[in-house]
Image 1 (cartoon, protein in one colour):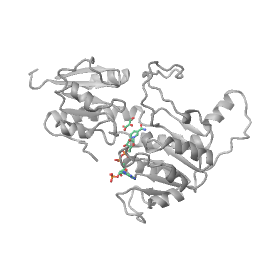
Image 2 (cartoon, helix red, strand yellow; image 1 turned 135 degrees about the vertical axis):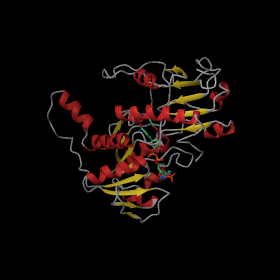
Image 3 (cartoon, protein in one colour; image 1 turned 30 degrees about the vertical axis):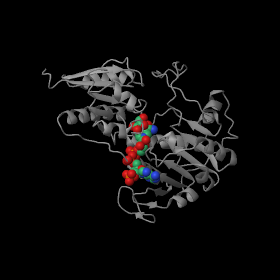
Image 4 (cartoon, helix red, strand yellow; image 1 turned 135 degrees about the horizontal axis):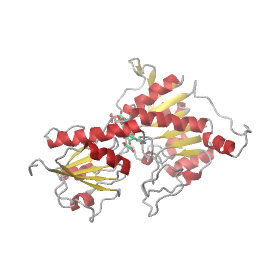
Length: 343
Ligand SMILES: NC(=O)C1=CN([C@@H]2O[C@H](COP(=O)(O)OP(=O)(O)OC[C@H]3O[C@@H](n4cnc5c(N)ncnc54)[C@H](OP(=O)(O)O)[C@@H]3O)[C@@H](O)[C@H]2O)C=CC1
Ligand SMILES: O=C(O)C(=O)CO
């Protein structure tokens, strides 16, 4: 291996099983270090010579992290979302940034429907009742998806997949996206039948609202008190995008007021709070992180929360690993792909 070819890559926040799968795929001239921890600190291996930081959504990459690793030239996130990376700080230091834009749109879209159906049919309560030996059905009356209006905020890769699934359920599909003109009726396959509407219309007309926009300064608390006040009373909110899109206090208020009948959330604004303890009782599914969240939404009877698992299918993870290696290899060969610029 020539010194010129050698590439020092520091991988953070990677589950042991994924690390093993990744190691089998790594080119031999890469010198890889792994830190299980999400937070990159000064004592982490690879500090001195790291050229590539390969992170996931729980590793914040900001000025303080970059300062510790002056040789970093590429930040490659193994995610579609990029709100954990300070793109300005990277630009200032001449560091390229890339992501994996389309590894699992189906996985996330299907999870949005897992949450929606879970909420619509009271699945967690029904499961608990059956486990206790009770087959009483009272109090578990749900609602059908067919005929309901689903509003999609952000008609990008995941939003379009959600639209296709919703059309299959016989839902009326509305979408709001600043890139698309309102009153546009999308007639082109594969999402023919989606009606593009204004922000006001999507809030007022949606029985179910599903969020699929990135977390940026422009989308921070997109759903605030004012937005909830304009929603159809009794609507259902689904969020598989990022917690920061929702003002949590305003959502709790809307749940109490009945504007929001129920919510299905895969993401919470405070999900990044690091707990020193590894959580127990993970149902034998192999907890491998010490992350914990604290929020009144977690115990609210009309809120179904999952711990940011929308991406977490074997198919999506395999694509993430392959695409990440291709991203880093392409950059090393002088052809940056899946580049991220400041929004
Ligand atoms: N729960 C999970 O495990 C996962 C969550 N995610 C989250 O999902 C998000 C969306 O992913 P994906 O669909 O692939 O991203 P895309 O970039 O393909 O789509 C996002 C869409 O939102 C649009 N948009 C931006 N701002 C607004 C706004 N204010 N209102 C309405 N639309 C807006 C964008 O328009 P334009 O292009 O014109 O800016 C784009 O069409 C990711 O950013 C990530 O945060 C992603 C993967 C897994
Ligand atoms: O890819 C992403 O943006 C994710 O949120 C994965 O967890």
